[in-house]
Length: 217
Image 1 (cartoon, rainbow, N blue to C red):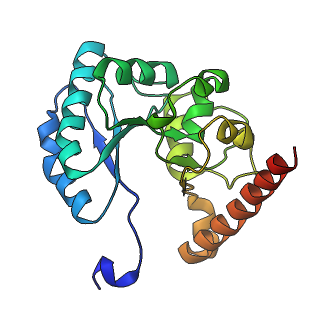
Image 2 (cartoon, rainbow, N blue to C red; image 1 turned 135 degrees about the vertical axis):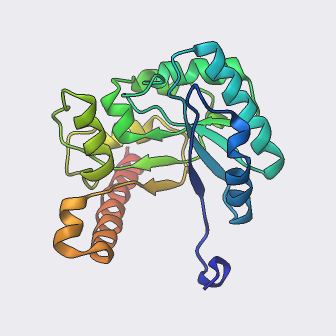
């Protein structure tokens, strides 16, 4: 079955991870495929310790994506060389591209120690969507532990220690919420379809309550 026949829209594609050894043009076919699927955004990560080089390559990726109607949204996992909001901001300011953005993944934001106050000060046009999830309050002591939680054991919103409402309230209103909640243990117990249903139902309940509470203030 073709995607168009399902009625499902593609919000974003991932991942353009630009290491020191890679050229942004390596991702051109990936960008073109995303555009063909109707995506509006592409997620990138910059695991490169050379700030000048990673800014230049981020700018190049933005230039490749712009004719395709794609924004390039920089994600900042805490175990990479672009580990927090402040470093992501340095990249965007240095690249100075009209289709550049920052992707706030609630797990990465919380684990990196990034500041909600800093988030509120940034241009609203930098934000195109947000990855929503929760996670245990305890932060793993190793990169391996951080990566395992991020890829296999996130929690539904409201179940963990992340300030879900506080972070979302600091972002521009009306952003699409993309649920990124891989949870291998639960999937093994109930199956992928039920996991997806629970994720949507739980997130909708938590986020709807937060919206009503803000409206009442």
